[in-house]
Length: 92
Image (cartoon, rainbow, N blue to C red):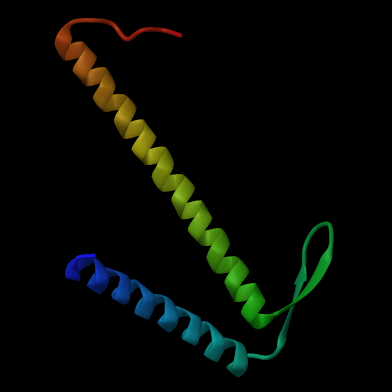
């Protein structure tokens, strides 16, 4: 393996270790519970679990929004290239 790959992998491992360490510290400092009263159920979660779930759901929502924007932009680029060629897009 080249030195650049080792360095990149090392940085990723250190970053992951830092995130896991921060999550552990958060879990130790916030041992309380959070009560959520939803429309259909009442849920009691630990604070670190609630934070992790909220972070994960936010990440997924952001990923879906970014994916939608990328797909829309690719479709617009494809349409403009076809318009530049003077051909209509194939309908399926």
